[in-house]
Length: 254
Length: 204
Image (cartoon, rainbow over all chains, first blue to last red):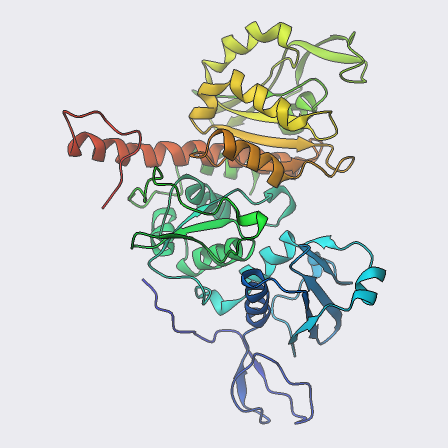
């Protein structure tokens, strides 16, 4: 099982110009030639999660190099961004995250936003550097509240398979990776994304069940555990090859 | 050769025939007749017996795709096929008068498949009507069966990648159920051989 320590995989070189835009979430000295770890979308994920937990009349504004600002309104589950999600920058450069109070005049003039789920899927999969989101617990067991709308999300067969497991039973993230023979980091990314999309419920090893990264919003109203739910069924690792799923995947070229 | 029967069900006009045509590697056998129920679906023809397509997986497996008639007066066909089916793609037309109610009606008819977890709901024409949302369908399903998490997707049945996602999800769900049911049943048998057996055993 993997710990909670952050590992710094993707890195970028610090800007040569000390006046260059500050990255709101990066750590370490900004000195020419020094490699500074980048948290990428992690700061955005944390800001969004905080608003999900404590709904306020606020928006998240994300600025980064080479893109116009991204505006996210958690309250209405919408976002505004000129960048299409097909061009989503997995490793954003010079990212800056600000939570601002809503301006009623601006909100009134804003065109209808885009549904947030597809953006949350991408942010969840591209934050925390493959570690578990800081609000999730390694030993907690997770289960889907509902499936994501996978026809509208870019996904892999492995993600689909892990999702089917989470739809059936409560699993700790480590066991999810083990049972599906998936990369543990990919399992953590998937759970992070589902948590951000408020599609999970959680069971602690203790008695209480809590929503996984969810507030009392309508979208998580079912995110409480029933006493009749199985805690989880321990399963042996399942070979990815040989079943109908894998043969169909091969046949369909996925 | 192992055969895997997948049903495509749902009300008339939901896109069952199109979905099978999109997935099938062979020309789909269609059994359609003039539609005399224009009030329900404004199209020229409708399926009166079956649509059939298939996907061959090497020399060992064949996935048989059966579209079953949407009108309830042909429900004798449903009875014949659901005994053999591994799972069902339930297509519902999002701009129908009561698509959530139609979904629940069909699931009641196919309760045994539903109980086995072998159902995926595919909402068509969501570009025409944005509601109900997938969350709306899921909420109704959860209310009906809190123990099951049934996948619900929006689809364009003409889009091959979307229909592949639907079919793969259905198969993944069926395999997961089989995978988790085996150790659960074994644990139940060893834990309480003389007592009433729980539906799902709990580890730890």
